[in-house]
Image (cartoon, rainbow over all chains, first blue to last red; front, top):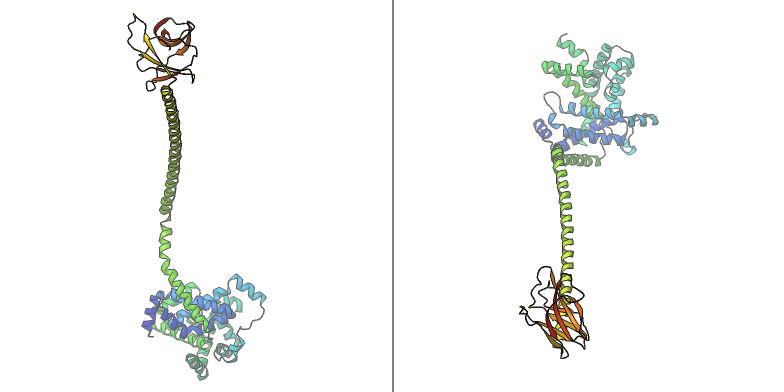
Length: 186
Length: 261
């Protein structure tokens, strides 16, 4: 599908367009959601909510303002972070002390993809990694990070920029690209 | 602050990572719309985030796609059906009023019809009662007429002609049927004119020369000219007299007389 066809399909609420987007971006968005909520079943429900929202809000997508992925990841991320702020989620997080990602063992056995973010982020210095994790996966604002980490707002911004630049280098390495290619084939 | 400084400040990264408040978001979007360099830099950051997301992609369970497409299909049908109920609920006050009015009108109609039905039923019962009364009355009259006819046909019945006394102006004659066997007496009134005002006709039986009252003659029922009168066994003769209204114990003015046998 071309960009025009996608935009046209989205604004018409066309099922085939949604199916195409799911096939191409579903796993990437699921990875983001899973990393935010750390619960397989909840993540599945939230991925469903995300695609229903994408379908509903399709006509509001403006290709001039943002890329398709930028728009969709924002919906997925907001949906997941909102879920973590719900009372039920907080209650469950308190009773469940384990902080590990909930993956099904059979999936973990052969799935190079989910290692990606961890590995890439894991290669970052802690002071950078924590910024990306807290901002992107936990929904902290700059001001909240300033208070939480006890560093000035200006530093929060510059470290974010540095973190993303290091990430860019890491992501352009062949290994990650290989995984990406492998994934798109799968 | 020039554009380059703005790009290098890290605000675009903060925006892409979702760490901007609403004011900062609006500012970044305004800058990106105004300066192509800002837009390009922002797009590059999002491209990195996209790569990161693909690096961390986790294939969802295969069944989830069908579930999601089904949820969307359901939302579609709901969306198509929604306009109808929403307009209905919008117009509900008037609609509801009309409905209430309709129900009220129906209630009134039901009450009206049921009272009408009740009335009609009662009238029908009354009519039936009247018809039954009428029938029994006719039956009685028929029986009476038949018994009178049987009496007239009876050979034992003797006819007594009651004629005005000589010297009187009356011209009528009355027939009296006397049956000693059955102990019954009939008086045929057909020709008897009404008594003058304040007077009544009275019938007498003469037994051993003594008049015995058989009662005041009631003339109301012209349709029944044959009047059953009391039976007096030893009557020698019968007389009609003109008496003050209500009758007398002894005849005042005998008008007509008829001898039995």
